[in-house]
Amino acid sequence: MIPRTLAENAGLNAMEIISSLYAENASGNAKVGIDLEEGVCKDVSTLSIWDLHVTQFFALKYAADAACTVLRVDQIIMSKPAGGPRREQPAGMDED
Image: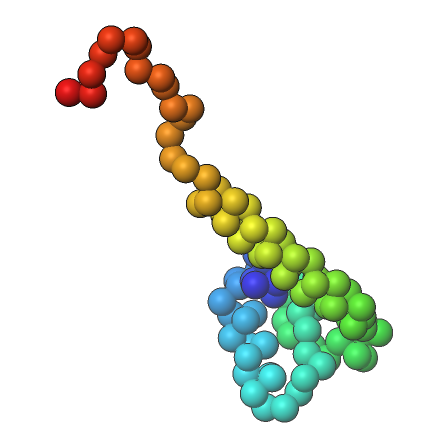
């Protein structure tokens, strides 16, 4: 998802960039990233670009936290009875 968004925001053909990223990763080159200036995939370690493990860790942590919050809210909504407050029937009226 991130390479697609990055390529689209840079004005590049996202499908072409993602296909070349998959091809590079399949060939065993794990240090490939998108060079936005030239619009091609390159070895980002030669460009002195490093992705921090801490960034990836917190991104996954907050994504899991957001999913748990949505599930908790959904559980609260589903546990409450549907409809509004119950009305008392006027005196002298039968249920029929």
